Image (cartoon, rainbow, N blue to C red; front, side, top):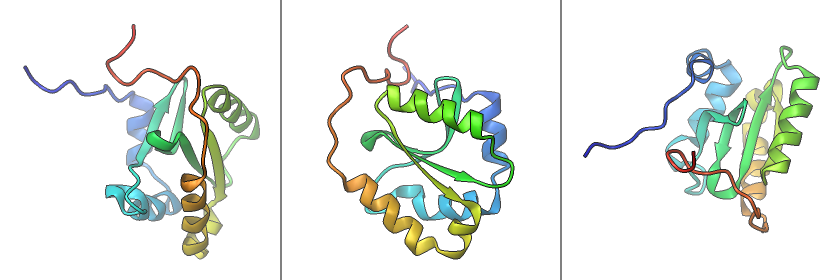
Length: 129
């Protein structure tokens, strides 16, 4: 029997192909467990939203915002994620491009924070209905 892979929605796939310079720079630092061994996903579907970067084991979402971000959408994403036990941290493109060390320190501090497990976590890919 073959490996079951999670289907990537077309919107997330497009966002992966069209990452901003800041997203690409941060992805280089987060991918392949480069940040203290934590596993990140890029342009990851969570409910009706696509998170820029997500560490599922620590329920942390990292968003990189530029001039194109929509505050109403951001508020909806943050509320939905919080209701499902995720924390969200946001950085401006400029911060990522000019202060990568500082951005990585903030992310690492958030990853290392103690947190209570969410009482109703999202099912893993392939589980549930």
